[in-house]
Length: 187
Image (cartoon, rainbow, N blue to C red; front, side, top):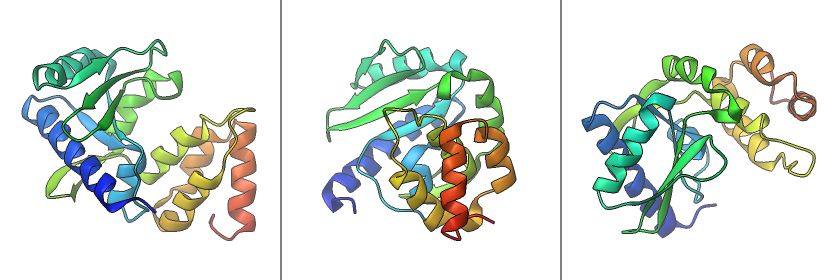
């Protein structure tokens, strides 16, 4: 369970960053743990994730820098980072989830406006969040706790056929589907 103070700070950073993107006409969707939280899932303490088109990423990073946030261009090449030092929160600007920038337009199209912490913004679907998380599982990074918790809390919102289509090629995703079915989470 998330620490209340840390979670509040994360929500404040999310709200500030989302307003910057919205007010400057940068199309985006809230992603990751906070998108799941907005849809009824568990709270998170990790970071704020936004997904946006690659062609908008530099402009978004510049907006955050002009707003006084520290910014980084990590070597991974699929995201930028901003740090809201007012409250110690990290914000990821993800433009190539799982090194697949071509999925971003589809993700943005499926995103739905939802109000969270008194601000309405587009949210990734639980299906898309799970697909991106499942595709990050690798031999040395196999932890099903997070994805099973999401599936348990939000199972009615998951489009299982689409999730299998998007992530089913991964052997780690296949193992997740088996676990989800055995636990009665998948339909």
